Length: 298
Image (cartoon, rainbow, N blue to C red; front, side, top):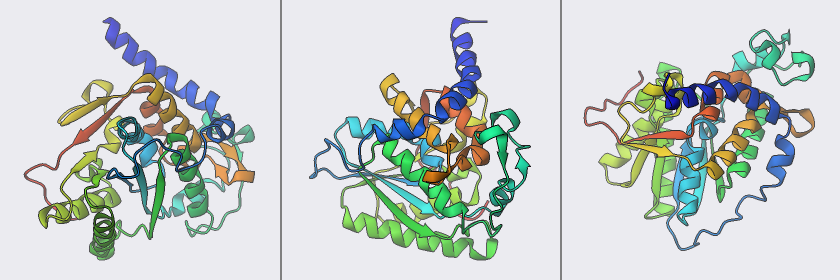
């Protein structure tokens, strides 16, 4: 085994322990970061606007890129696109002994018999959004914008309406912040309807000239083996260690159990298989829109 391979596998193997060990410290870590809007970025500079389809996508695959832009002196705005309704996640939090994560669950004794409504919205949306806001604070974005759209892209009958809604809201931001750059999920690679709908909106707005400086972060790259994650990327961001520390703090926001702050480790129960590899990999993967891009639900 080469030295580099050993380091890569060690980083992957250690990520789970680090996530679990540090998750309980999130409240203190986030509180130390200061309030949103505390930035040295020039108020006159055009912002970099990052669009997170769901709560946790920014921590998985955008945090390092956000910090890169902040280090360059640009204000960074983070958009939460959808409400992130999830009835399956609500049912998962009502089961008592955690069967999904077992010893990795952050709840005391790995038990969460919450008796939540299973509409996937009434408890899930505010709790997921509390995690998102803590993550945004840990990263240090200058502004959070919530599109507050129902996560309806999964239904073929409403997919087009969801794309229309995202398109209209992004167009409004482009008019409000001329010269801004726009960073979306690489939805054609993430193979998730909400992510694909966001890249469809970008495709429309690029074609009509509304937005010009556009890139796409591959959120689900961490589903791949370590050596294959950069395949096809236009740019691989190697995240500096100081920035990686802050990215990990944002990840910990999704593995914290603190009901007094509306934290129920929902991100970890929803996407631990992406959060853990992202915690151990100091890279992010940025794409441009492929020439053969095809809009529409995958």
